[in-house]
Amino acid sequence: MRILLVSPSVARFDATVHYWQAEFAACVAYLRRRFPGHDIVAEPAGLTCAPGRVAVSQLLTQPDFLLIWARVWESPAARELGLLAREITPDTKILVWGDGPLFMRQYFAREPFDAAVVSGDPELALADAIERFSAGNLPGHGMVVKASRADWIPTATGRWLEPAEWPFPALDVIPFSDYHIAREMRGKPTDDLSFDVSRGCAVGCKWCVDPLKGGRTDRRRPVQATVEFMAASLGPYQQFQCHGPIFTADDEWSREFVSTLRRKNLCIPFKAVTLVNHLVDESLVAELASVGMRAIGFGLETLTADKSRRLLTPKVAERRLEQVAANLRRYGVEGKAYTQIGLAGQVRDDVLYTHRVAHDLGFTVRPTGATPFHLLRSMSVAELDRLDLARWDRKSFYNPSCGLSRREFFQLITSPGTFAADGRKEVA
Image (spheres, rainbow, N blue to C red):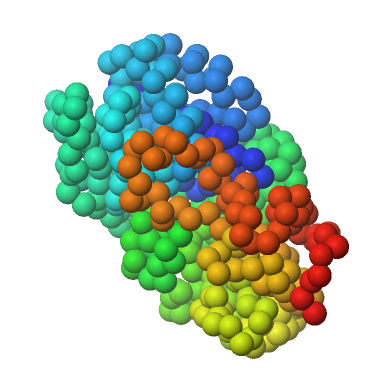
């Protein structure tokens, strides 16, 4: 059996290689474990090569299964690749997974696809589907499936893997030399190895894929396995990016993580993402910094410039930001404030005020376009086909209602540390 995994990346400014590591390369590792001895080929095309040529050369080998990993903005490219595959190798089963089908399953419930992962842990859904297709049966969970030429049906809800079974990324899928070049091309300062530490988020922001991808319950990789992987895998990489919606959501896990590293006399550089309000706890910041935390990101989203208005993001207590900044500065941790441009109700003054406050507090500002992925879920296929989905990535989605010019928007996205607004009146 030959299984081909492809990523038709069309990323512009994002650190997409980190998601390749945490999701694409991890899925390859799981399939290798499930199907030992079979031919499993991974092509994260677009990293440092010509994706079309690479894809065609692999399709000519007539794989039994083509697994396409696609986010929303890559969905048109994924469909084009699927149509090409159907022409070149008509008997290949074409399965798709990633943020694309999670946000808009209807887009993929048609030719040329045979199935798309819409719930559950994707590695498990894909591996089980391959087994069932190979036995002449339709997949049983986590998918929408082509039952006949014109009929697509949903399966049972996808199942979750036990966290101890979560795969670590297969490090040969993205050779370090290719990764390093891609990282430099994207202007990122360090070589980071990314892997999932947790999945699932109870916060449930409507634009976020995490609740769709991992559920609403925080699930954690065992601490011992996490530390052992970090201790053994740093190699040429400079630090780890510990993927998960809220790194500090589980106090007991955090304490065990710190104590395990200390017991092993390890201080391993890492960064993660959490909720800004958790960082008010100085002892938490101190403990994590003592075992290697170098940076921590948090969703600031937007502040509200005019205090007489309703707060746009009430989950962030602005009065606590000075304390958060002081805690991070005291222990040498970089604070990364993730902001969104174009949120509902946000005006120009809010954007400029948010940027100024975060910058003045010493945070590294990481702006993105407020991409309303949740709106895609209710659109018809015809409506989706009329959209330019290739622009629905978080570094390109521009909504003029934010009050910034397009030039300002891209200046802020690409160079937030040197951003200077046009000469229009700014908030005092």
